[in-house]
Length: 227
Image (cartoon, rainbow, N blue to C red; front, top):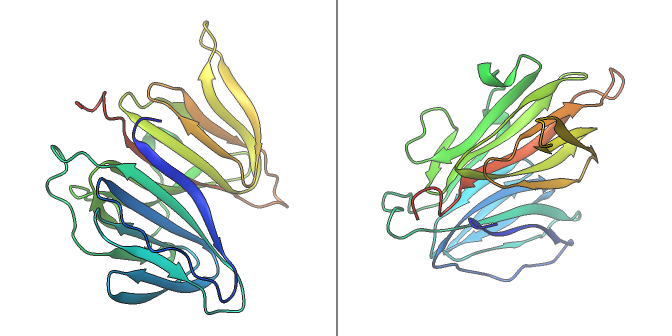
């Protein structure tokens, strides 16, 4: 994991508060999985709720508190910042909710999977938030019954899948003769993929179980991206 500093689930009980942190050489992407609470960003106190996602620039203090009666769960993702290449980045907080983002198909990934394109680089024209330097794409995949994200590779990026809902087979690599390596997976499982790894997903959900969903993040691998 060359480009990743952290990937974890912050859980704050009712009435709880997290530490306030600041990272000088990292950009952070946060995703609220469950609950509501308060994001403390610099001197601002910002209400957040389920399915909010946000970009925290380097050198900005942030933390969470939970004045509610239910726990709040937040996925915290930290990515190593390259001062030589990360020149044009957003300075303030950028935040949105998945309800603001339509699902769409992407031709290279097949018709049975739709995508919410949440966050990308500052040059992005397709993502809801064009914010990051190293993070090239934060997105949600929604799989129709027995649907698939056609297995593929990314030559210069690492990637993480977190299964939000459902079950199926994760493709992670291939044999010497090119056969897919599949791994049974379920809700809550997380998978890391290095560059040039064959990756994909085959949903095992039936009609009664509904659609499977995955939260994915892809980001540049420092050496292969020129550093």
